[in-house]
Image (cartoon, rainbow, N blue to C red):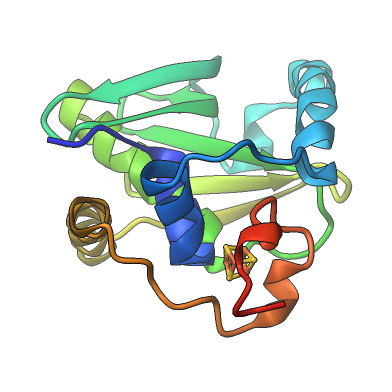
Length: 191
Ligand code: SF4
């Protein structure tokens, strides 16, 4: 089984070609502003989260683990979640974003990837996840339904199939997404 990362799900929803380039035509990527800023933001996340209370996630109790590395052998999937909140009843993945805009569909599928691993490895319910918007200090909650998890598992199969067949997918429809893409130099049919 081809090993995949949770970030592949996020990127596949953003643009299927990004995942194709990563696996089939590995090229040296140009670091984007988003990538560089992500490294700086990690330190800030730790400082902010240490002051934050669990009630901001609608929870009264629980323990927190930062930058938790996750791996499911059954799904051939790994990832590092920014924060994992554990309660007796359920586990909650939290992803931090240094943006004030609302999270997009690709962020939902990132949370679903973590949920699939957590349910497999820890045998706990993971039916909600959060995207924490750092500038707004706001936790946006997502329902991680069984139907969405099945869709995510099918997406893993589709990604593996794309890699196996080595067939380049079409470019993303919304070309505004290409502007700060690290692979923009390779999409000659877009630019
Ligand atoms: S430049 Fe656009 S089409 Fe090409 S990989 Fe990036 S987002 Fe996708």
